[in-house]
Image 1 (tube, rainbow, N blue to C red):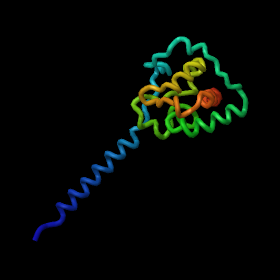
Image 2 (cartoon, rainbow, N blue to C red):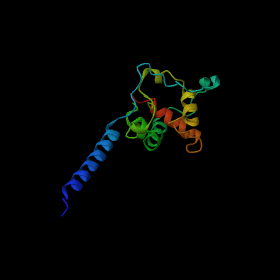
Image 3 (tube, rainbow, N blue to C red):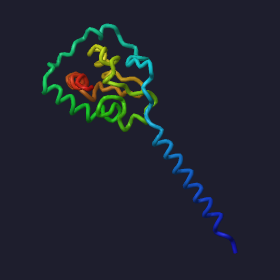
Image 4 (cartoon, rainbow, N blue to C red):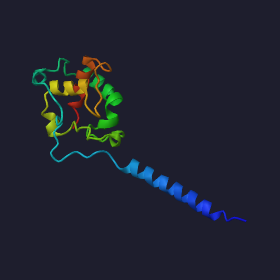
Length: 146
């Protein structure tokens, strides 16, 4: 007669190893904001976009529409507060960006529009998914994040 205990021990060990590996993956967390955070690091921003102004009026309606779009398209990575701490941020290779940082606040709207429309690496390109008007509305909203 064989002893069933080795099988149970092997099964328990395999389950424990699987649980530990999943825990490490889940709790590893999002990439951290670098100490020298520059939201344009690695981007090839064409100089003319720096001079493009947001054509959407800065009013409650534009910000409200922008907030709705932000919640649907952006918050999963950038977080509800815009600090790069969304639930999907842990799946990214790079820090998703902190919209509340001084470095981000200094960016011209045209640069943010370009980055949103074109995308790069983990940042999807929203050209075709959002209209230009919608991207500008999102920018109006993210400018309110603190």
